[in-house]
Image 1: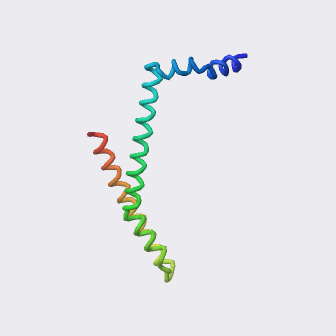
Image 2: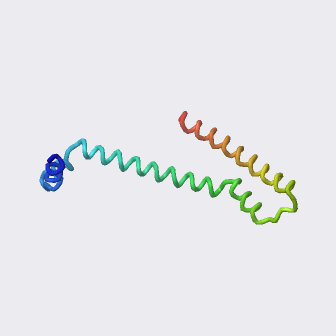
Image 3: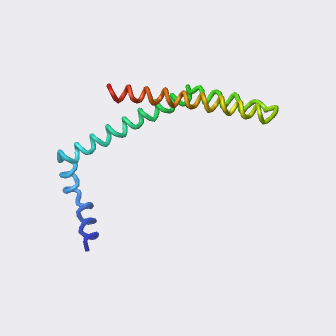
Length: 101
C-alpha cells in the first residue's frame, strides 16, 4: 500500500515540478554537483601525481630488466620500496599543508 502511494506521488508531474523548484531540493542538487566536481578534480590531480610518480617510473624501468640473481632482485625491490615510502611521506606532508590552508 505504501509503495503504491509513493509510486503515485513520484508519477505526479505537478508534484515533482513543485519539489524541484523548492529551495531544499535545489540546494541539495547544488551541494551534490559541487561534491561531484570536487571529487573529479581530486581524481584528476591524483592520477596526474601517479603518472609523475618516481615510483611508477622506477617500476616500469625495473620490470623491463631481467635480474641476474636473487640478490639483485632484492636490491631492486628495496629501491622501489624506499622510493615509494619517500613519496608517501611527501604526499602526507603536502596533504597536511593543504588541510592547514
